[in-house]
Picture 1 (tube, rainbow, N blue to C red):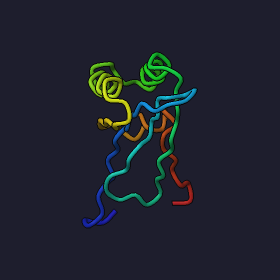
Picture 2: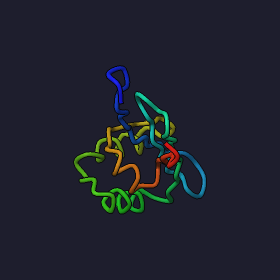
Picture 3: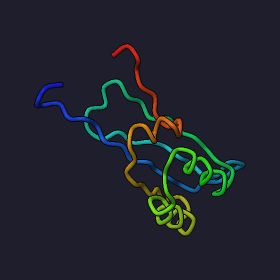
Length: 99
């Protein structure tokens, strides 16, 4: 990696929508996006999402405010930073293995 390239950072985006799986979760990649692609997942309820977040190693203090804000303001996206390995555990990012 050269001095002009930067390691990307990642944001987990949460949004409440409509439908059978109303919670939309995605990953934004900030910085050098080469080799990375965000993936969208949907969840039926906050409990299912919280279970996945916990399984990925995220403590509730990191996401509680974003989740509550989404529930109170349906249709608006709320985000918070996550690490690459957390995004991978949540299956919201794909890495091009040919890099």
